[in-house]
Amino acid sequence: TALNSYMPVFLHLAKTDQGKNYILWTLMEVWRDNKQMITVIIDKMLSCCVVTPAVVIHWALRFEMLDELSRNWLWNVIFATIKKMCKHVIKIQNELLAIRDRMGAMEPDQSGDNALMNTYSLYAPNEEEVNHVIKKLDHAKDQQKKLLLQTLQLTVHIILKQNEILKQYQDSW
Image (cartoon, rainbow, N blue to C red):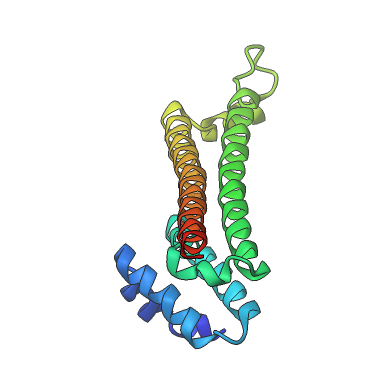
């Protein structure tokens, strides 16, 4: 795809959160008339790790995007981003369960009858691998909590800002 052709450029630009934010704003300007394309490209960029879920949520729920908040495409981007993060956490949970299942299944046979299974137990995951996946899962869950909290905080901030604008408008009458 065209996104893959320019992947080195995107990865270079996305070294900082400011660069990731700039990519999203540029995407919005270029595809202003085709919101579905924005949704698809953001999803692809999330999959390729060009942008992070936190940056996408922060970009989508900014005051500058207030006019777009009533549009379905923006909420699709927000929900798809959160869903992608949740899928990532579930994937790591399943990875941990699979490793623990392999650890339990690879217990050496004490009777000595099953020599073939004893050789497979040499490849059983060790505690270090399990601890690595546990740390990875804890990190992913922490990122998920931060993302959900950020989404909630930005939504509340927008609501408060809207109430402030509404109050100023009513006071002017």
